[in-house]
Length: 357
View 1 (cartoon, helix red, strand yellow):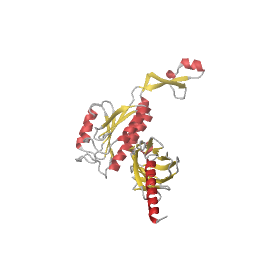
View 2: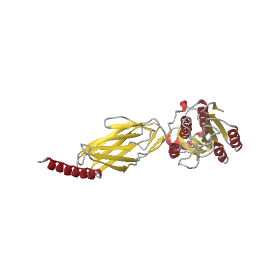
View 3: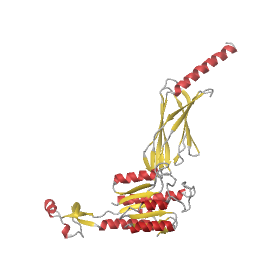
View 4: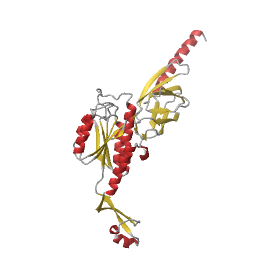
């Protein structure tokens, strides 16, 4: 075979190969999804990756690339490249109709709602003469809740405040509201004996009374770093302090709910970009706890209004135990909190720098 004929054959073969590679790109199916839909800060999980070649043409090499938030840390393994913890790519060789499944270790570092967005595919031949690109939309959101502290991890003024509310609830028993019946225990009052249940079970049974009033805890967070802050963005230096405030507020709400209180929170941060301040007035129940945690995760990192304006919007609240968490205090905030007290609320102020007041 002459050199010219060899070049022609090689050229035709390359064209055919390029057509095959380009066609094979349409036969690639990729799925990337997290092993969980919700998690707490600091918890671990997996990013499951499934790549399948639905065509009859082998793919010498395939590179799958996508971005991921720095709030999620990926582990490192063979054929997985992570760059700056925000960009990662993985490489595959696929035979016809072959499927590869990989599990990548991940750690959820910060609260938020994360999705994988788009994946970019690059396919080519062994010699690297031909390359083709494509995209596929990936949708696998994961909601990362703020870390919930144990009661003994809370700063002293907050743990004391929570303990007083729980004690207040336990002391307010309504003699006309019966929650359940249980066997007699030392210390139970004779008037609480349920004689019909005692006769039926042949064991002394007593009434357990429900509470007349369920304390309502409203935690109010100040997203401003200073009273003179003029823009709506959370400065990088203040971001860790704000996140700690959110963890404290979420912990107070969740621990309160699990102790039988009503709980809610308010903050001058929106849940959607360019939205209004978030105000969720106290309610109770397991479903409400999940809604609160989701709301905490959705908070956007910028201010929606001045904190004093938020306090003034809460002036219609009555008979609530309001806990204000802020990184500073000011005369305007004190005046706004005094108005809340005049409306019949118990207001406690916790300064992140100086403790409670």
